[in-house]
Length: 305
Image (cartoon, rainbow, N blue to C red; front, top):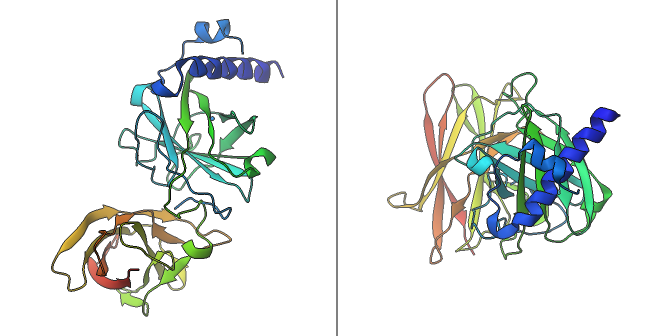
């Protein structure tokens, strides 16, 4: 109990210090323990239909790899991505590297999430992702009934990493891109054409979203199985090209493997591509590199409204 009291005192101090800095200076640096002691006193995507700009106030960050809002710890030592599923009343935080994409496992007991409105504070506990070493995690998850409130959140993420305290502010802002926090409804998985066969792999190609619009992003999706079981060690890249394949409209980007969930099968996704505003006929170019065997590419035409 004493250990928990001391931990909350330290992290609460970090939140107070971050509040003083304000959202115009969100690049938080590691907080000093003596300063904390003197203080008074943390797609994915959601079925709630809540959309976000996911840009850190004053910094103009693009959305994180899970379409979440980004803040940083230690002047960029770590980037931290906040996502929320209002229907599940659940928040998920991802620890990323300097490129704002690569998972970086950390040794931390929890990440403290503090939201200003609705006013709440809750611990997010380690939920390691595939590849995280023992004793470390690049993902932290927690539930709170207040997270069911559908609105743009403003708050702070704080934690002690290897004994060093960090804190960073974040602010969500609404925008018109209808890409919620969980691929459901209009953002559900859509498979195009019949599955492909390559080197013993069964490959399904498609995208998230039943309605794709010019000027907005499309998030390609790839399901890869072998003997009916998901394959997680394939490298998948996608680009956007003209329907005839002659012109590249959006440069190639990598994807991330998403394990199976109650809502979706295991698949590769999160490599969003911007559809040109004047585009009418386009295709997604998928480049698939198995861990063993020959790479293969497929061009899949998609309908744009």
